[in-house]
Image (cartoon, rainbow, N blue to C red; front, side, top):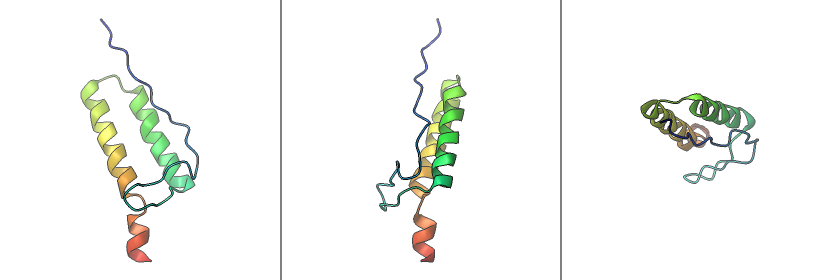
Length: 72
């Protein structure tokens, strides 16, 4: 029996996502990368790989804005 895979939203635009750790509003390039992570996640059917992709997307999302803060 095939398990139904939850599809996640991958149509965010610049300004839609804000990092709760530092208040950084993701740029167009950062949102495009986040959406690509989500599109890959939506295509993946293997549960362990889906979890890995979710983790990688989360690490990317939380990391957004920190480099800019440190340099500024």
